[in-house]
Amino acid sequence: MKRLTLVLAAVFVGITSAQVKNVAVVETEIDVQSGASAELTSADARLVTAELRREAVKNLPRGKYNVMTSETVYAQGSAVLEQCADENCVIVLGSAIGADYIVRGTISKIQTRFTLSVEIYETDDGNLVASSEPIRSESLGDLLEQTAAVCADMYKTFVNAQTPAPEAAAPAPAVQLPGTPLWNLHKMGIGVSMGAGGVITGGYGGGIEWDNGERVAMPYSAVGAYLYLDAVYTELFLGYHAGDGTWESPNAPNPQDLPNMPRSCINIGVFAKYPFDIANGALKLFPLLGLDYEMSVSGSIKYSNRDGEYPFDGVNNRPGVNALSSLWFKVGGGIDLALGRILYVRSEIIYGLRPANSFEYYCVEKLPGGDVGAKFGQGVAVKLGIGIKL
Image (cartoon, rainbow, N blue to C red; front, side, top):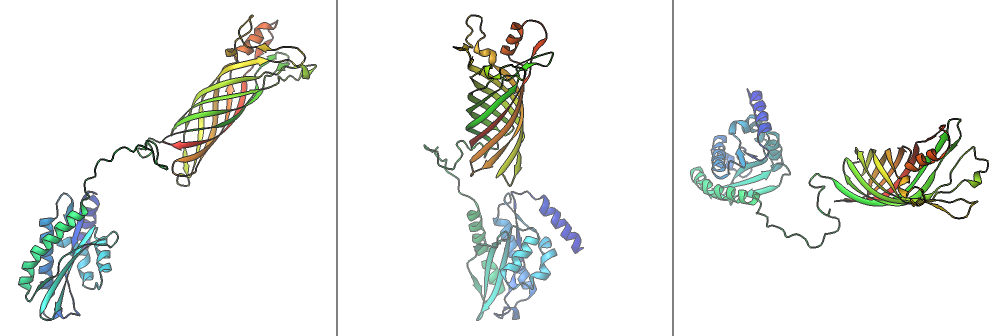
């Protein structure tokens, strides 16, 4: 029967709302060393315990506190409680039966008078959170009468101490404090961040190729900077880079005569990403997949063996600079390394593939015959930046 009661008690504790605190009034101790046990019995101690429980029911708000029944308390603890010599034992027993707080009285005898002291402990950390004024009398009956009033005051004091004072509305700070996210979006679970950094990028391949295998490639390398806005699974970015590259052809009779093509571009794109949290947020790894529109803003062709320059200006049937623009399909990965609560370093390496651009098709159209075609281009970008969590 006792085991069944313990099971039911455990189930009761498990389904009790997390907002309601369980209060266990355990058996009142009779101080043997003071001599009180010579005149008081266990039945007398239980009368005092019942009075403490009765006042707990009357004075503790039911919506916040559940006073556990004597059957639940005694089922697991009464036999061992008699052996408790200090508060720690009681706290362990209270925690074992699922109590958030325990109430216990101690009766001692000084000369001819009994003294009852009542204390409330928090089982989570063992702190004493409330205690009664000493109750003194030469008879048990008078002691019980005084207990009602004194314990009522103790329980009310306990409730007031556990109820937080209403918080005044805090004015919005005029200046953002260091170390505090600007809009606390991470606290709201939104996880937005932004950052900036540098990029080293390069393209290879592309150009035109004849059916017999002869080809002209138009590679380039460039450096630049970028900004990004990150929302956990998405990264939006805006960047700029500038560089050049000399055309390549294994079939050219004089490779030194191949032109150099300087250019500059603005990149606008979006990545889908999936972060993997490592080391409790200190390190995050994420794959990337997305689109990058490379919009050329300047470009020209320079020949080492000729005077002048071939600008992409759209004049005299020359293509405009937008002929060098292209849409890239990109895949890669990145690492975020935390520098503190809101700062982190981000590095990314990205591979891209693009269809032929308008200038490459322009070259195909200007060449005689139909045995030449425009080629896909490829590229790699390495990024390094610093971000801040919003």
